[in-house]
Length: 230
Image (tube, rainbow, N blue to C red; front, side):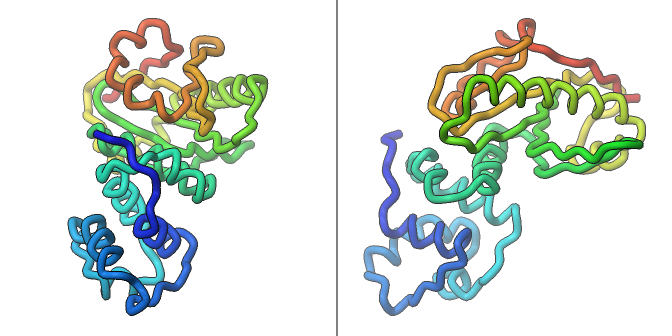
């Protein structure tokens, strides 16, 4: 698919959904309206119903991003006009499109500390524990520190799984009586090369689809934890 840059129609959609910018339909050209409909019609929106809406659910936001990416728009262009929160939605959308079950901003706590995981993505036998780093100038040291922290979160999640199991099994449709491979990842906004720190992958998000397609080949060289579901 030819990669497209953001045009005025895509910009109008993004600013309406994520920036809460008001759009006056009568001021849009017929061409802009047609291009907007291409994106929103598969989601059962009309122009009126779409622009009447002031708030969108997290799933609707992901679906809108998904339709924009499907249309051929470069995800990098999308991320440049959104913020860190929407970057997490872009990452979740990539996993959605590759048939993973996804939840975002998963929070849990132990006796002393509260934790948050940006994205959890499951497709048997893999459960990815993902930290999204939306920093244009993120240093290598910063990303390695993030990898260390993500490994710690993964270990604590596995340790606490008996307490969290009901919620995670329900939200991620985890299978019972199976062994899962828990793999922490750090995904960066930066367009760099895939690197590894203590066997934890640090990916530029543009490389994520290819990484997931080849995960069986990467698996033996990645830090991973086994989780047995009873």
